Image (tube, rainbow, N blue to C red; front, side, top):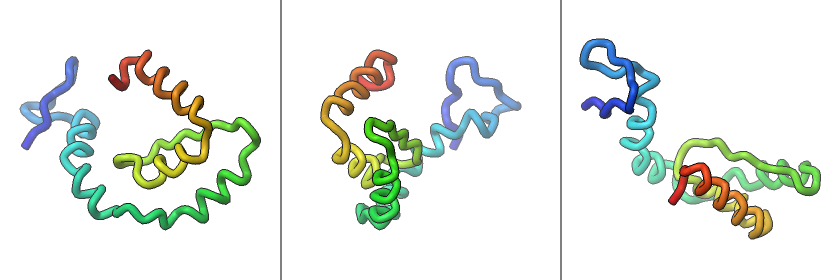
Length: 98
């Protein structure tokens, strides 16, 4: 099944080019990945070590794949609520979340 082409996409015949299909591939497989990944935070020791080495006020950018659980959820619990609010507002300002 082909993923619908985004606006301005370039096609090679009837097929989307690989870089045009990536969003659809992630969306098509998100539920299976989340189920296979599970909710256990087996990376917690590593993440805690990373956090401990950060300077006060340091920023963290989680660019992992998936639904953000459990790592992004864990990180969100480690930072001040005002930082989460500012990030949410910025994402909304950029039109990336409703």
